[in-house]
Image (tube, rainbow, N blue to C red):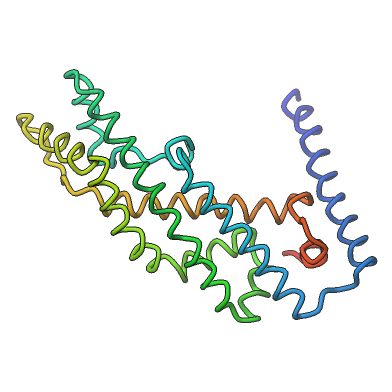
Length: 240
């Protein structure tokens, strides 16, 4: 009974939020009218360029990865036993240096993402735009995953490899892997870390983009121009 009662405030807030979006959508449509095809195209592309640019800027800043618990890069799963073993024999500083270096490399690479997303946005067709606007709440994120992952990997990997070498991460991780590989009967781990960091950097970028996409779909305050208000008011009225 108590659990049921506790649900009522949550449901009230949720329904109130939906009502607010619907009311604002109706008001926006009445004020501006339905957006034209050109306005939908320009408005969504404007929103995506803002969101992807913000994501790239945030993650390429100092501690963009290292200071974000949701995407912070840790030892690869197959090497986590090695990390634990190293810490247990007094090599915790080495393990910490590895983790910091992996994240610094991802931060160095993130700046490469912005022009790739801008190019992908420019190449969107009207069908792409409409499907994204009226699709699921992560429709844009999924579109970018399909169309940019290979390019991101190609651009990220050499930057990450250079960064890993520059800050000593390659040496740190190789030393850590080799130290663990000397432990009797331990499963051997691959001392090459660049592929892993590249994939984790891309994964983290899409986590951030999904967050920005959800923000503009749900947060009225994120619609900072009349065009965005008009286009996403139309989205609020017609979303699935």
